[in-house]
Image (cartoon, rainbow, N blue to C red; front, side):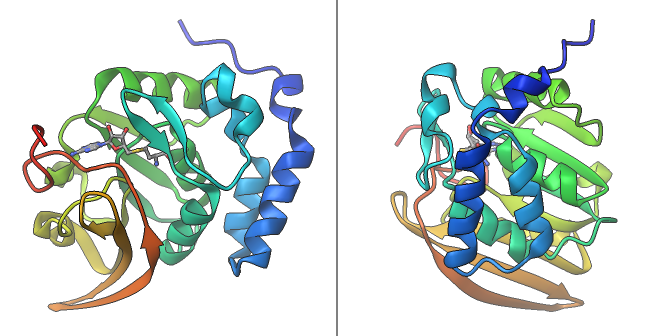
Length: 225
Ligand code: SAH
């Protein structure tokens, strides 16, 4: 049975705070108009637990259960901008989490393939995103460090959990001209790395500092640390 869509009144809540959040992103240097439009529309407060809704538009991460967090809006905007989505792209996301980044990708790309390793988190995000009406998302509960080879290659890949390096299998699953964004570094602080693949050449630049939860899996960090 399909879930009941969120009523308009729930979606419209916090409109003022949402506008302020986007203004702040512009002040901090986000330029991609499509990213800002998507973030103006998406009810971020409906993707966090009820007790955190009033804090959903502050520029900070928030807990989403199972020791995981929803990323802060500025970092989400910066990473999405670096993916240079044009509307026709097929995008792979590793770390579904709250589903907020997934919703932005679903607005800006043709199809989104998202992988989450914690079943309850993945199921919760799927339910919320279906209630919000997103139909162009395919979900999987698995270790995303392997990517999703069968459905690739992708125009863009985004990792929203941090590993010691970008898994080489993910670069293999990028199309020629494809973009990848990932937090890479130590367990408690990382750099945001933006990669563009051109044939055998892989151009890589650092676009900012960040602190993401650990990406746990075969090509990430081991579970017991
Ligand atoms: N973009 C999300 C980020 C959530 S935190 C948001 O803003 O809500 C990162 C998520 O990555 C967590 O839910 C965590 O369980 C998940 N994760 C960690 N390692 C993973 C892996 N190997 N494969 C898939 N998901 C992973």
